[in-house]
Image: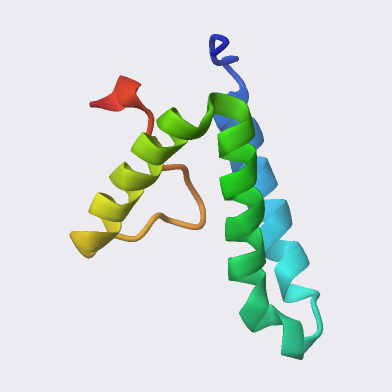
Length: 85
């Protein structure tokens, strides 16, 4: 895994804003499906980026986060990598 670029968080936040705006522009009948579609794309991207074992650990941390009743903010990023433990 390569070292994170200093602007990666800013890039992620910009991408999240653009995606949120794009979802608002979807036809009403597709908006409910957008979250599932984005989750599928994100999961595939994470697996390609870090491999299946690390992706499994990241998703387990996300599951723990959600099980505690927490929700990732739409305007920010939640770090789920091993480096924030």
